[in-house]
Length: 328
Picture 1: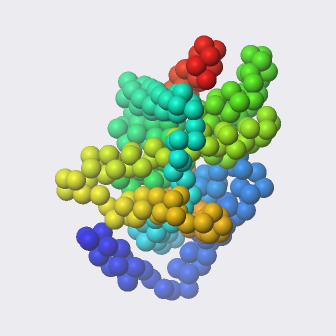
Picture 2: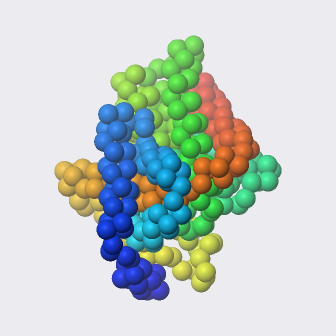
Picture 3: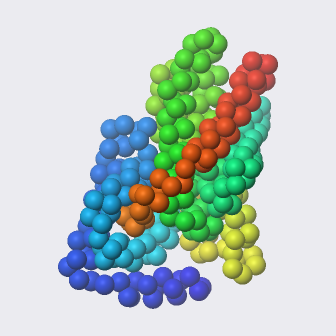
Protein backbone atom coordinates (compact mmCIF):
# COMPACT_ATOMS: atom_id res chain seq x y z
CA UNK A 1 0.00 0.00 0.00
CA UNK A 2 2.81 2.42 0.84
CA UNK A 3 4.47 1.90 -2.51
CA UNK A 4 1.16 2.32 -4.34
CA UNK A 5 0.62 5.69 -2.65
CA UNK A 6 4.20 6.66 -3.41
CA UNK A 7 3.77 5.73 -7.07
CA UNK A 8 0.61 7.87 -7.33
CA UNK A 9 2.35 10.81 -5.66
CA UNK A 10 5.35 10.53 -7.99
CA UNK A 11 3.07 10.32 -11.02
CA UNK A 12 1.22 13.47 -9.96
CA UNK A 13 4.48 15.34 -9.47
CA UNK A 14 5.88 14.40 -12.87
CA UNK A 15 6.47 17.59 -14.87
CA UNK A 16 4.62 18.00 -18.15
CA UNK A 17 6.74 20.64 -19.84
CA UNK A 18 7.84 20.30 -23.45
CA UNK A 19 11.34 19.30 -22.33
CA UNK A 20 9.97 16.50 -20.19
CA UNK A 21 7.87 15.18 -23.06
CA UNK A 22 10.94 15.29 -25.29
CA UNK A 23 12.94 13.39 -22.68
CA UNK A 24 10.29 10.68 -22.39
CA UNK A 25 10.12 10.35 -26.19
CA UNK A 26 13.91 10.00 -26.30
CA UNK A 27 13.82 7.24 -23.70
CA UNK A 28 10.94 5.53 -25.49
CA UNK A 29 12.88 5.74 -28.77
CA UNK A 30 15.81 3.98 -27.08
CA UNK A 31 13.46 1.23 -25.90
CA UNK A 32 11.81 0.78 -29.30
CA UNK A 33 15.13 0.75 -31.17
CA UNK A 34 16.56 -1.79 -28.74
CA UNK A 35 13.56 -4.06 -29.28
CA UNK A 36 13.69 -3.76 -33.08
CA UNK A 37 17.42 -4.52 -33.18
CA UNK A 38 16.87 -7.59 -30.98
CA UNK A 39 14.36 -8.88 -33.54
CA UNK A 40 17.06 -8.74 -36.20
CA UNK A 41 19.64 -10.40 -33.94
CA UNK A 42 18.25 -12.23 -30.87
CA UNK A 43 21.74 -12.45 -29.38
CA UNK A 44 21.46 -8.71 -28.65
CA UNK A 45 19.37 -8.45 -25.49
CA UNK A 46 16.94 -5.48 -25.79
CA UNK A 47 17.37 -4.53 -22.13
CA UNK A 48 21.14 -4.40 -22.55
CA UNK A 49 20.84 -2.36 -25.74
CA UNK A 50 18.40 0.10 -24.16
CA UNK A 51 20.71 0.59 -21.18
CA UNK A 52 23.65 1.15 -23.54
CA UNK A 53 21.66 3.63 -25.65
CA UNK A 54 20.66 5.50 -22.50
CA UNK A 55 24.24 5.65 -21.22
CA UNK A 56 25.49 6.91 -24.59
CA UNK A 57 22.78 9.58 -24.84
CA UNK A 58 23.29 10.76 -21.27
CA UNK A 59 27.06 10.93 -21.49
CA UNK A 60 27.05 12.66 -24.88
CA UNK A 61 24.78 15.43 -23.63
CA UNK A 62 26.26 15.70 -20.12
CA UNK A 63 23.35 17.85 -19.00
CA UNK A 64 22.63 17.48 -15.28
CA UNK A 65 19.17 19.00 -15.66
CA UNK A 66 18.24 16.43 -18.30
CA UNK A 67 19.63 13.63 -16.12
CA UNK A 68 17.39 14.78 -13.28
CA UNK A 69 14.45 14.83 -15.70
CA UNK A 70 15.18 11.25 -16.78
CA UNK A 71 15.51 10.16 -13.16
CA UNK A 72 12.01 11.45 -12.39
CA UNK A 73 10.52 8.89 -14.75
CA UNK A 74 12.20 5.89 -13.13
CA UNK A 75 9.91 5.54 -10.05
CA UNK A 76 6.90 5.22 -12.38
CA UNK A 77 8.45 3.27 -15.26
CA UNK A 78 10.19 0.68 -13.09
CA UNK A 79 7.20 -0.91 -11.29
CA UNK A 80 5.09 -0.77 -14.45
CA UNK A 81 7.89 -2.28 -16.52
CA UNK A 82 8.56 -5.06 -14.02
CA UNK A 83 4.86 -5.93 -13.79
CA UNK A 84 4.37 -6.12 -17.55
CA UNK A 85 7.60 -8.05 -18.03
CA UNK A 86 5.98 -10.97 -16.26
CA UNK A 87 4.48 -12.05 -19.61
CA UNK A 88 8.03 -12.78 -20.80
CA UNK A 89 8.61 -15.26 -17.96
CA UNK A 90 7.40 -18.70 -18.92
CA UNK A 91 7.01 -21.02 -15.94
CA UNK A 92 7.53 -24.47 -17.46
CA UNK A 93 5.72 -27.69 -16.62
CA UNK A 94 8.58 -29.81 -15.28
CA UNK A 95 6.77 -33.06 -16.02
CA UNK A 96 7.63 -32.72 -19.70
CA UNK A 97 11.37 -33.11 -18.99
CA UNK A 98 13.40 -36.15 -18.04
CA UNK A 99 14.09 -35.91 -14.29
CA UNK A 100 17.85 -36.01 -14.84
CA UNK A 101 17.68 -32.99 -17.16
CA UNK A 102 15.73 -30.99 -14.57
CA UNK A 103 18.13 -32.03 -11.80
CA UNK A 104 21.28 -31.25 -13.79
CA UNK A 105 19.89 -27.87 -14.88
CA UNK A 106 18.93 -26.84 -11.35
CA UNK A 107 22.26 -28.03 -9.90
CA UNK A 108 24.19 -26.21 -12.63
CA UNK A 109 22.25 -22.96 -12.07
CA UNK A 110 22.78 -23.24 -8.32
CA UNK A 111 26.50 -23.93 -8.72
CA UNK A 112 26.92 -20.92 -11.00
CA UNK A 113 24.95 -18.72 -8.61
CA UNK A 114 26.87 -19.83 -5.52
CA UNK A 115 30.27 -19.79 -7.26
CA UNK A 116 29.82 -16.27 -8.63
CA UNK A 117 28.54 -14.98 -5.29
CA UNK A 118 31.35 -16.63 -3.30
CA UNK A 119 34.10 -15.50 -5.68
CA UNK A 120 32.66 -11.98 -5.77
CA UNK A 121 32.68 -11.89 -1.99
CA UNK A 122 36.28 -13.12 -1.87
CA UNK A 123 37.22 -10.36 -4.32
CA UNK A 124 35.63 -7.89 -1.88
CA UNK A 125 32.84 -6.77 -4.19
CA UNK A 126 29.77 -5.29 -2.53
CA UNK A 127 26.97 -7.61 -1.50
CA UNK A 128 24.69 -5.94 -4.06
CA UNK A 129 27.16 -6.38 -6.91
CA UNK A 130 27.73 -10.00 -5.92
CA UNK A 131 23.99 -10.69 -6.03
CA UNK A 132 23.57 -8.96 -9.38
CA UNK A 133 26.32 -11.04 -10.95
CA UNK A 134 25.13 -14.27 -9.30
CA UNK A 135 21.51 -13.87 -10.38
CA UNK A 136 22.44 -12.73 -13.87
CA UNK A 137 24.82 -15.66 -14.31
CA UNK A 138 22.76 -18.42 -12.74
CA UNK A 139 19.22 -17.49 -13.73
CA UNK A 140 18.28 -15.34 -16.71
CA UNK A 141 20.90 -12.75 -17.49
CA UNK A 142 19.90 -9.11 -17.86
CA UNK A 143 16.26 -9.81 -16.95
CA UNK A 144 17.21 -11.15 -13.53
CA UNK A 145 19.53 -8.21 -12.85
CA UNK A 146 16.86 -5.68 -13.81
CA UNK A 147 14.14 -7.38 -11.75
CA UNK A 148 16.10 -7.81 -8.50
CA UNK A 149 17.75 -4.37 -8.59
CA UNK A 150 14.81 -2.49 -7.02
CA UNK A 151 14.95 -4.96 -4.14
CA UNK A 152 18.65 -4.78 -3.28
CA UNK A 153 19.21 -1.16 -4.42
CA UNK A 154 22.71 -1.34 -5.95
CA UNK A 155 24.62 1.70 -7.16
CA UNK A 156 23.72 2.67 -10.71
CA UNK A 157 27.25 2.02 -11.92
CA UNK A 158 27.15 -1.48 -10.37
CA UNK A 159 23.82 -2.16 -12.07
CA UNK A 160 25.14 -1.01 -15.45
CA UNK A 161 28.47 -2.83 -15.12
CA UNK A 162 26.74 -6.09 -14.12
CA UNK A 163 24.57 -6.01 -17.25
CA UNK A 164 27.55 -5.37 -19.51
CA UNK A 165 29.60 -8.13 -17.86
CA UNK A 166 26.85 -10.73 -18.04
CA UNK A 167 26.28 -9.96 -21.72
CA UNK A 168 30.01 -10.31 -22.46
CA UNK A 169 30.25 -13.68 -20.70
CA UNK A 170 27.15 -15.00 -22.46
CA UNK A 171 28.46 -13.98 -25.88
CA UNK A 172 31.75 -15.70 -25.08
CA UNK A 173 29.85 -18.93 -24.48
CA UNK A 174 27.92 -18.61 -27.75
CA UNK A 175 31.22 -18.21 -29.60
CA UNK A 176 33.12 -21.14 -28.09
CA UNK A 177 30.34 -23.71 -27.51
CA UNK A 178 30.18 -24.89 -31.15
CA UNK A 179 33.93 -25.63 -31.03
CA UNK A 180 33.50 -27.53 -27.76
CA UNK A 181 30.70 -29.57 -29.33
CA UNK A 182 32.82 -30.30 -32.41
CA UNK A 183 35.93 -31.46 -30.55
CA UNK A 184 33.96 -33.58 -28.06
CA UNK A 185 31.66 -35.05 -30.73
CA UNK A 186 28.64 -33.85 -28.73
CA UNK A 187 25.15 -34.82 -29.93
CA UNK A 188 22.61 -32.05 -30.68
CA UNK A 189 20.47 -33.12 -27.70
CA UNK A 190 23.40 -32.82 -25.31
CA UNK A 191 24.34 -29.48 -26.82
CA UNK A 192 20.82 -28.27 -25.99
CA UNK A 193 21.49 -29.14 -22.35
CA UNK A 194 24.86 -27.36 -22.37
CA UNK A 195 23.52 -24.14 -23.88
CA UNK A 196 20.20 -24.10 -22.03
CA UNK A 197 21.74 -24.86 -18.65
CA UNK A 198 24.71 -22.47 -18.77
CA UNK A 199 24.22 -19.60 -21.22
CA UNK A 200 23.03 -16.40 -19.65
CA UNK A 201 20.40 -14.87 -21.93
CA UNK A 202 17.50 -16.32 -23.84
CA UNK A 203 18.51 -14.68 -27.11
CA UNK A 204 22.02 -16.08 -26.84
CA UNK A 205 20.63 -19.57 -26.11
CA UNK A 206 18.43 -19.26 -29.18
CA UNK A 207 21.25 -18.23 -31.51
CA UNK A 208 23.66 -20.86 -30.19
CA UNK A 209 21.20 -23.77 -30.34
CA UNK A 210 19.94 -22.90 -33.84
CA UNK A 211 23.23 -24.13 -35.27
CA UNK A 212 22.35 -27.66 -34.11
CA UNK A 213 18.60 -27.54 -34.76
CA UNK A 214 17.67 -27.90 -31.08
CA UNK A 215 16.40 -24.38 -30.42
CA UNK A 216 13.09 -25.41 -28.83
CA UNK A 217 14.67 -27.93 -26.48
CA UNK A 218 17.43 -25.55 -25.40
CA UNK A 219 14.93 -22.75 -24.73
CA UNK A 220 12.75 -25.15 -22.74
CA UNK A 221 15.73 -26.07 -20.56
CA UNK A 222 16.57 -22.40 -20.18
CA UNK A 223 12.96 -21.93 -19.01
CA UNK A 224 13.72 -24.08 -15.95
CA UNK A 225 16.34 -21.54 -14.88
CA UNK A 226 14.13 -18.57 -15.71
CA UNK A 227 11.41 -19.95 -13.44
CA UNK A 228 13.88 -19.74 -10.54
CA UNK A 229 13.49 -15.95 -10.60
CA UNK A 230 10.17 -16.39 -8.77
CA UNK A 231 11.91 -17.94 -5.76
CA UNK A 232 14.82 -15.50 -5.84
CA UNK A 233 12.66 -12.36 -5.85
CA UNK A 234 10.55 -13.63 -2.98
CA UNK A 235 13.61 -14.45 -0.87
CA UNK A 236 15.30 -11.12 -1.65
CA UNK A 237 12.07 -9.23 -1.01
CA UNK A 238 11.99 -10.62 2.51
CA UNK A 239 15.73 -10.23 3.18
CA UNK A 240 15.97 -6.67 1.88
CA UNK A 241 12.57 -5.30 2.84
CA UNK A 242 12.38 -2.37 5.24
CA UNK A 243 9.58 -4.15 7.09
CA UNK A 244 9.90 -7.84 7.86
CA UNK A 245 8.16 -10.16 5.39
CA UNK A 246 7.03 -7.21 3.27
CA UNK A 247 7.03 -7.89 -0.48
CA UNK A 248 6.68 -4.86 -2.81
CA UNK A 249 3.42 -4.84 -4.76
CA UNK A 250 5.15 -4.79 -8.14
CA UNK A 251 7.02 -8.00 -7.32
CA UNK A 252 3.73 -9.67 -6.42
CA UNK A 253 2.15 -8.36 -9.63
CA UNK A 254 5.17 -9.51 -11.65
CA UNK A 255 4.89 -13.03 -10.26
CA UNK A 256 1.12 -13.00 -10.73
CA UNK A 257 1.41 -11.93 -14.36
CA UNK A 258 4.11 -14.55 -14.99
CA UNK A 259 2.01 -17.34 -13.47
CA UNK A 260 -1.25 -16.24 -15.12
CA UNK A 261 0.28 -15.79 -18.58
CA UNK A 262 2.11 -19.15 -18.35
CA UNK A 263 -0.93 -21.07 -17.15
CA UNK A 264 -4.15 -19.48 -18.36
CA UNK A 265 -3.58 -16.97 -21.17
CA UNK A 266 -3.67 -18.33 -24.75
CA UNK A 267 -0.24 -18.30 -26.35
CA UNK A 268 -1.44 -15.90 -29.05
CA UNK A 269 -2.35 -13.24 -26.50
CA UNK A 270 0.91 -13.75 -24.63
CA UNK A 271 2.91 -13.33 -27.84
CA UNK A 272 1.03 -10.13 -28.67
CA UNK A 273 1.71 -8.65 -25.21
CA UNK A 274 5.42 -9.44 -25.10
CA UNK A 275 6.57 -6.63 -27.44
CA UNK A 276 4.77 -4.02 -25.33
CA UNK A 277 6.19 -5.46 -22.11
CA UNK A 278 9.71 -5.57 -23.52
CA UNK A 279 9.56 -2.02 -24.88
CA UNK A 280 8.27 -0.65 -21.56
CA UNK A 281 10.97 -2.39 -19.54
CA UNK A 282 13.63 -1.41 -22.10
CA UNK A 283 12.49 2.21 -21.80
CA UNK A 284 13.01 1.93 -18.04
CA UNK A 285 16.55 0.66 -18.60
CA UNK A 286 17.20 3.55 -20.97
CA UNK A 287 16.10 5.99 -18.25
CA UNK A 288 18.46 4.36 -15.75
CA UNK A 289 21.29 4.39 -18.28
CA UNK A 290 20.74 8.07 -19.01
CA UNK A 291 21.47 8.93 -15.37
CA UNK A 292 24.68 6.86 -15.18
CA UNK A 293 28.17 8.32 -15.52
CA UNK A 294 30.29 6.20 -17.85
CA UNK A 295 33.38 7.12 -15.85
CA UNK A 296 31.89 5.57 -12.70
CA UNK A 297 31.05 2.37 -14.61
CA UNK A 298 34.66 2.09 -15.77
CA UNK A 299 35.88 2.46 -12.19
CA UNK A 300 34.07 -0.74 -11.21
CA UNK A 301 37.17 -2.54 -12.51
CA UNK A 302 37.87 -6.09 -13.70
CA UNK A 303 37.09 -7.99 -10.49
CA UNK A 304 33.38 -8.45 -11.35
CA UNK A 305 34.40 -9.77 -14.77
CA UNK A 306 36.73 -12.31 -13.15
CA UNK A 307 33.97 -13.49 -10.80
CA UNK A 308 31.42 -13.83 -13.60
CA UNK A 309 33.75 -15.79 -15.87
CA UNK A 310 34.97 -18.05 -13.06
CA UNK A 311 31.45 -18.94 -11.92
CA UNK A 312 30.32 -19.61 -15.46
CA UNK A 313 33.30 -21.97 -16.01
CA UNK A 314 32.26 -23.91 -12.90
CA UNK A 315 28.82 -24.46 -14.42
CA UNK A 316 30.24 -25.48 -17.80
CA UNK A 317 32.62 -27.98 -16.19
CA UNK A 318 29.75 -29.53 -14.22
CA UNK A 319 27.57 -29.92 -17.32
CA UNK A 320 30.43 -31.39 -19.32
CA UNK A 321 31.07 -33.93 -16.57
CA UNK A 322 27.36 -34.80 -16.48
CA UNK A 323 27.34 -35.25 -20.26
CA UNK A 324 30.57 -37.21 -20.29
CA UNK A 325 29.40 -39.58 -17.54
CA UNK A 326 26.13 -40.31 -19.36
CA UNK A 327 23.90 -38.74 -16.72
CA UNK A 328 22.19 -36.74 -19.48
